[in-house]
Amino acid sequence: MKGRKGGSGFGLGDLVRGIGDLIELLKEMETEGKTEVTRTGELTGRGRLKDLRGVYGFSVKVGLGGGPTVETFGNIKKGEEGPMVEEVMEPLVDVFDEKEAIRVIAEVPGVEAGDVRVELKDDILTISAEGKDRKYNKEILLPA
Image (cartoon, rainbow, N blue to C red; front, side, top):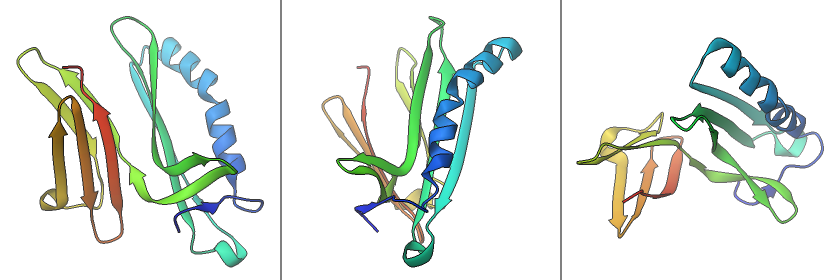
């Protein structure tokens, strides 16, 4: 599946609409006093691309400084010719600097704890995991 371009009939309009709703989402957060909101979606191929499955999402958080932080996750990546569905998904990750330690929480549904690999080199943490039907990988720049 890696490298397949999402062309017409692929349903990327859902992705564009989802991102376009970001401003409304920020307004909702402000009105309701929320500090975090997450939205996800799934795209499936049609015709000869019927086995293609794309997962996308984003998380919006408002931190202590008041400014929003947007983090994307899933397996739809920006390619030279447009959006592409990759075999490996990027998990949603939260990083907390707790003075004495840095806590990292990664959401990798469909994977057993023993199938998660973690590697630290300098201030870059790499998390990779592989379950029966899903693969994840993400590099995280740590604050310290």
